[in-house]
Length: 209
Image (cartoon, rainbow, N blue to C red):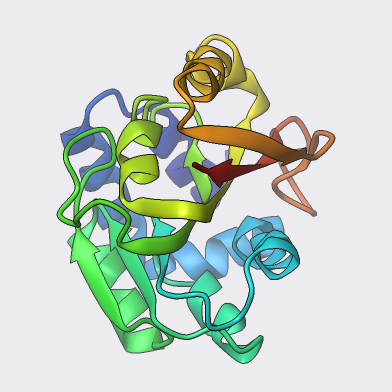
C-alpha cells in the first residue's frame, strides 16, 4: 500500500475523536499533496451546490469539517464572504489559517455541542466528513440548529455509511420534526477522480425550516 493509502486507511479506521485527531495530525503536512495525487475532488465540487442554492451575500457560511481549508478560497473566488470553518484537528486548522479564505476557524468536534447560537449561519456545507470513522449522523442536529430558517444544509455522505450509519433515519427524523425539507440529492459519484474508485458518495441539499 502507498504512503497516502496507508494514511487514508488510518483515518477510516479511527473509532474515536482522539484516534481521528491523531490520524489527521500525523497526516496534516502531507494531506494536500497526497489527496491531490489521489484526485480528491469533494472540497471543490461542493462549490457547485453552494452556488446553485445559496445566494451571495446571504450571510455567513460554515465549512463543517474544513480540514486544511481547500473549499474556502474557491467559494471566496465565487463571491462568497464570511466563511467560517470548524475542524477537530488543530494541525489541519493551522494549514487552513495559512491558506486563507476564512473569516474565522474554530476547533470543535461534530457530534457534540457547537459554539454558535441558533440560526447563526445562512448555510452549512460539509464534504468528506460523513464517512467511515468520522462524524455521526447525530451531528446534523446541531448543524441544523445553528443554521437559520430559509438557509441550507449541503453535504456529502459516503455510500458505505448512508444506511448503516443511521443517516437515512436522521434525514427522515429531521423532516418529520419540521426542521428541514429535502431539496436535491445527487446520484453516487467518485470522491477520488484518480484512485479509490470504490469510494462513492452522494451529495444532499436540505432547506432548513
